[in-house]
Image 1 (cartoon, rainbow, N blue to C red):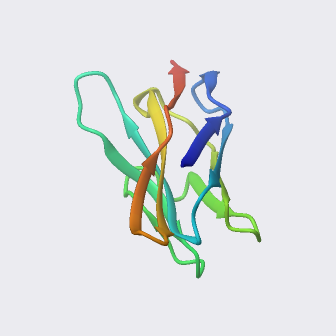
Image 2 (tube, one colour):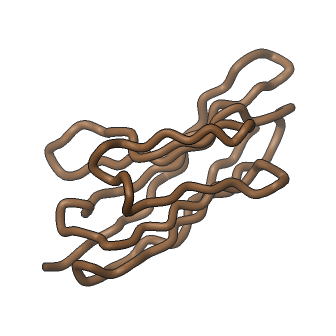
Length: 119
């Protein structure tokens, strides 16, 4: 089994900051990609940022310059530093991993953490 657990959401005023963390554990050989997605009410889930195991990062245009994704040296934890938050950043944030298991590739999701930005 593979577990993906997020933490760090909450309520913040516009212009504030939050830091999300996600840790993966369990039965996998390595994790190729760790990333963050978000889903606002009535909208589709969208990519926020992701980071490969070689350090390549990718951000959505809406968060570039405000959010920073980073992975630890063990490459099983990913964090998302969110600065200059806006009300439109309000959403449930999900961590996603693309892991390599002996049985093949595996996509895993966390349960999500709520981020609410008040105006």
